[in-house]
Amino acid sequence: MAGGLGTRMRSQVPKHLHPLLGKRLIDWVIEAARALEPERLVVVTSPGSAEAYDSGVEVVVQQRPLGTGDAVAAARGALDGFEGGVLVIPGDAPLVTAGLLQDLVDAHERTGADVTLLSFVSPVSLPYGRVVRDESGNVQRIVEEKDASDDERAIEELNASYYVFDALTLWRSLEQLDADNAQGELYLTDAVEHVVSAGGRAAAARSRADPAMLTGVNTRADLAQAAAELRDRVNERHMLAGVTIVDPRTAWIDGSVELEPDSIVHPFTVLRGSTRVAAGAEIGPHAVALDAEIGPGALVGPFCYLRPGTVLAAGAKAGAFVEIKNTRVGERSKVPHLSYIGDADIGEDSNIGAGAITANFPHEPELPKQRTKIGKNVRTAVHNAFVAPVEIGDDSWTAAGSVITDDVPPGSLAGFPPRQVTKEGYVRAKRDDGE
Image (cartoon, rainbow, N blue to C red; front, top):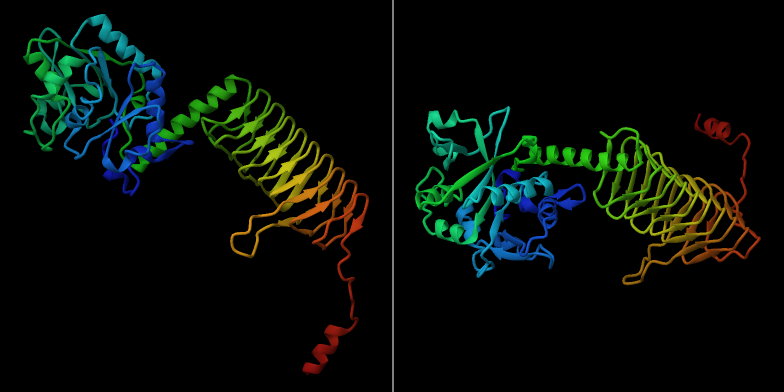
């Protein structure tokens, strides 16, 4: 269920589409559900988000936000003719795992109930529905906190809003829902009472998992807490696989990032998107890599930014205060410090001096950016600008402070800015004139 607008997020972006560690919030939920290999995977969403999902799911639209019961009812057409169990999952709980969902499905099949809900006990007070049982311990209904009496609010067993219904039982119970409650909505929770009233059986599978895994995201504070938990999970997975993360609390690594064993991630490093880090590479501290490829034994940082399309070959270096974009840096080549290298190709064993800039932005409309090509074993001096398109041949050098606008043949020395002119006594003479 992803039909809510998430007004407490104070955002123009629907809650379920907010970014969360390299994915959208809803994507974490879909990923957990997909791991169960369901026959059908249906997402119920609001009208404005219907185009936000890929072809891997069926999308149905809840035209008006009339409550959770109405949201599930919107999926009836998509599931027409389906007679198995229907697993209902809230779309705002990104910490849910495939294992937890599978446990609920297994409990439903084991008990033979018409509906099985997931319940939990929280050490802190939460505004969740209470699971009401009879004297024999059988589940009778769920009462939302806003509609609960004082005695019902004292019940410790909470509804986590995950359910497995037998399909026919689900549709029949939804037909009986009404909005006679504190929020004036059609509650899915009321379907449990209707199942029991019709002679069916309801069961609750009490989870022993951390309640944080079950609770939803409603505010940006909740979103930040979920991000921290997912960060810890991702980092632990990499560390158990042989990656060194010096300070897991300050390393933010998207779930899509690939790191090989024996790579090292230093503090305050952010690895995003499709970034790949090979064995022996060291990243950080204070480094950011987005959709970059970092080869074996490469060094990145500190204070370095690798933008999309960057490839550092084996043993290459992108050092302090360096930004690289859409560039291949060859094996053992170095961009050690204070440089911007964009849309370039650098051969093997070259060294780019401090203060280097590739100037490739066309000043005429609709012209594409051009590339800078720097060959093998090249030595560029400090404060060089390379105006693309330009090619520096193998084994060439450039002079300090030069703007390179023309191709440089292999084995050449190019540049030679105007030589220094020293005017002795100039400052004293100016002062004397002023007096």
